Length: 161
Image (cartoon, rainbow, N blue to C red; front, top):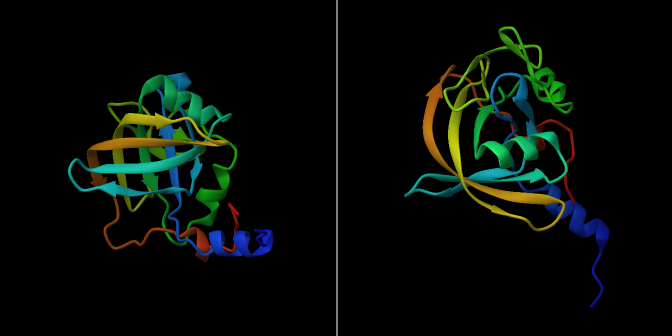
């Protein structure tokens, strides 16, 4: 059986993914990066599942700390999403150059995020170049209820395939 690499890439890029800044770690060890491969995976308990590049600083922080913060990116804020293609850290009251507050677990809640989730890692599946992280939601908040979250398919950017 032979399959088309172009068809596979095209089809995978049709899958919808939100864009978020995911962070983990405390103080000078905190790191955050743009993540686009995540979804809700259970109602009870409330779980989210995401894929994070296995050789990234973010993955190392999540693996060490066993928790993470997901700050959804506002639908119109490509500047925020793009800034975290290079991992961000704390500098005073900013995280990666953006106003943020520290969550009790560590990591950052980005002030302009429409909403956020704080999660404790339950399982990490170490397969492929991106490892699968399954986390339980333990806290959440709304910063801007009227704002919509960004979807990767709406940005013109492509990650995957």
